[in-house]
Amino acid sequence: MSEGRGSPSDSSASAAPGQRLKAERESRGLSVQQVAENLHVGVDTIDALEAGRFAALGAPVYARGHLRKYARMLGLDAETLVSAYETAQAPLPELVPLKPATRASRFRVSPAVVATVIAAAVTAALGWVVMNRAERPAPVPAPPVTVSQPVTATEASTGHPVAESPPAAMPPAAVAPPAAPRQDSGRPEGGAERVRVQMSFTADSWVEIYDSSEQRVFFDMGTTGTTRAVSAAAPLRVFLGFADGVQLLLDGRAVAVPPEAKRGNLAEFSLDARGHVRPERKR
Image (cartoon, rainbow, N blue to C red; front, side, top):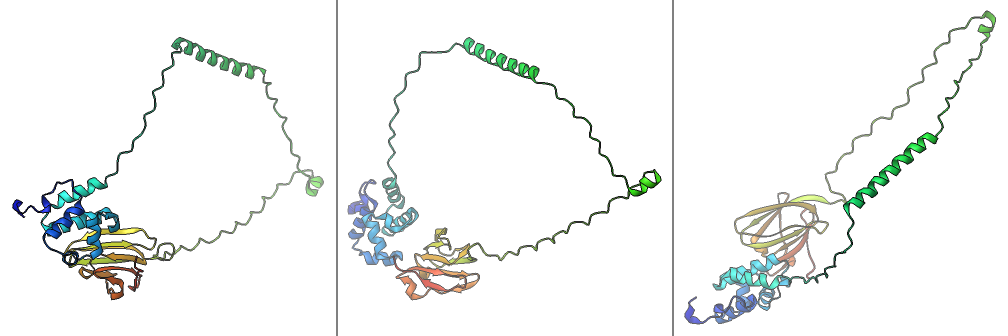
């Protein structure tokens, strides 16, 4: 775009990115619907970008990706718009009040005084230990204990001791058999089953996947011609920014996204371990 047109793209870099996109679109005579179809997104996404409502797009990575694609379509400098967005989103530095400096105490203890106090304490402790040992009476040894053995009838009649037979050996204690090894069912706790989801991209599309505990396990934009995969505990919650550009395989089986799970090119649905798709309630 030449400088002679005086287009809105010549405005300063500090202008709001959404306002610059809207002004450039209007100067080209494009409608919001035309832009949305060209970028494969919903009309509400274009409205949010131009109005500066970036929080409605989800995480910052969504906003940056949409800004770049929109700017490149209009022939604007994408990185300048992204920098303006990041500057506007940067939090203000927190002002921390400085604590007033306390006046140092004028009273100082001489090192010699400290050494004298320590030496006196050590001397007193040693004296107490010596006195305590001197006053403690020596232990009196206990008299030996003699154990008398009973005289048997044989010893009484013969007058000779009879050798004692060794005591009978005690039977060994019963040993419990080792516990059978616990078999692992291969499933995480809570009954969830791990599955593998493969995504093949025939067009650029955002993909967001949550596992059975609502932990986000994938959050990125797949580019045309690439393949990505993720392993997680089912059931999964899946969001596709451009559903027609993503082919899903669950453990090697193709997943068909029904029309009721789509809203334009957007799709949001639940996917269980058997590949059943349930549309999510529109938010």
